[in-house]
Amino acid sequence: MPNLEISSILDVSRIRADFPVLARETREGVSLVYLDSTATSQKPRQVIEALADFYLHHNANIHRGVHTLAEEATAAYEETRARVARFIGAASPKEIVFVRNATEAINLVVYSWGRANLREGDVVVLTEMEHHANLVPWQMLAKGRGVKLEFIHVRPDGTLAMDELPRLLALKPKMVAVSGMSNVTGFQPDVAEIARQAHDAGALVLVDGAQLVPHAPVDVQALGADFLAFSSHKMLGPSGVGVLYGRRALLEAMPPFLGGGDMIKRVTLEGFSANAVPYKFEAGTPAIAEVVGLGAAIDYLNAIGMEAVHAYEQAMARYVLPRLQEVPGLHLLGASLERRGAVFSFWIDGIHAHDVAQVLDYYGIAVRAGHHCAQPLHIRFGVPATARASFYIYNTPEEADRLVAALYKVKEVFA
Amino acid sequence: MEDLYREYILDHYKAPRFRGHLENPAFVYEDDNPTCGDHLHMEVAVDENGVVSAARFDGMGCALSQASADILLEHIIGKPLEEVKQFSKDDLLNLLGITLGPVRLKCALLSLKVLKGAIYGLKPGESLTDEED
Image 1 (tube, each protein chain N blue to C red):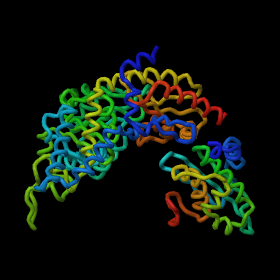
Image 2: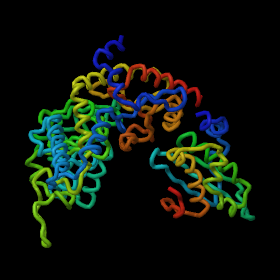
Image 3: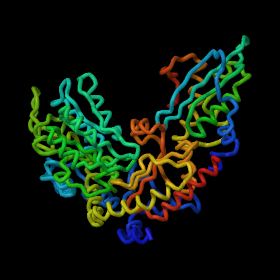
Image 4: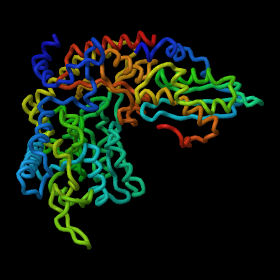
């Protein structure tokens, strides 16, 4: 019984009780089935309360204040930095830079490290399955600078053509930037192996962890990531805060990104000297309450255990995938069960993804429709858009059953 | 759903009357909806009295974007071009007879955007400045 196997991993009914929004109806008599966590996760009460508690009792700007509230706010902010460092196995909290989201984290690396280190003729290796966040910033830098972008291609089953890597590494790239988990196919490449080979070839490794960090245990040292980017809002935390991890020596050698308050050591009318890491990269007032909320989200995930989160989603993937494949005319964008998370993008013959999503919404099921900010991957599969159902720790096999039943209704409407 | 996919919309989606191409269109234009990849191409012919004598569309996308194009062309054929130029977003929504959220609104209104681009003689890539995007 797959259901028994799944329910033995996590106590999902207890988890669901922590997420008030999951109890709502989308209209009279139709309960919500939230299958859009890859876009943004829902937030547990503990995170919402941490945000409220900060504003109700401690709100102040951080650093440089000597009053009680400023001390408390600074302590809460900096404690979260240490918690984030432990969560991903960073050697020091100084390697944790708070930014707005994973997109900004990658842009920071491209603008700061990239502009200082990439010259005409240099090569950056990416993959065909990257989210636009780990593609467009590199394209913006490459254009006009003569930097060449090379790509590891995606196989028909959604996995990466790892056999292409040696040829690309022979080009002596300065950087290999790869997603830890595709937001479309759910494929989780062997980043540690990619990093090992990339380092042997003298390249640095940036991991787009926007999907990986919420769904699997991550240790930057075991992974071999020189940079890791991820977003709070996809891992139960508030929106508006993201994290850039960077190896300390790299961050210290990089020029500042945004200029302004907090990122300086000393300013005169003639110029400035930059603050130490990580403050050098945190210009202006950050999302203080949201950072504190991220801390609560990390506590929540740690209490469950990231190994259990990962195991649960693997079990859900094994439950959902064959049931989707039974729907006539449904095609999955990447149908391998190997190294995948519980995210499924699909199209149904003759029915546009928006129409699929709209009918599913009628049955209370929230999925996303479009190219999911991964247009090249859709071009590779020859479809303009897909519908995407993504599962997290609060989703159940019964919800997967409701999805599949509703997909048959979709087919009836457009028969 | 009953509202959005009412028989009228589904009928125009499944059995479009005006999908195809014209021999000698006076106006041709096409555009995309970048958020979801809907694509529409339109061709409009006008007779010597300035009346829309024929129109066809082609493209791919959701039921709403394609049905909206078919319904819009059905409506404008036989009308003076100057009158068609005055046709508004609200006119189209009245014609469709449905209420839409901001995301699906773009699907429904792509047809009007492409039609206006055509009859105002825009070149590919150009867009009208008064578009309410």
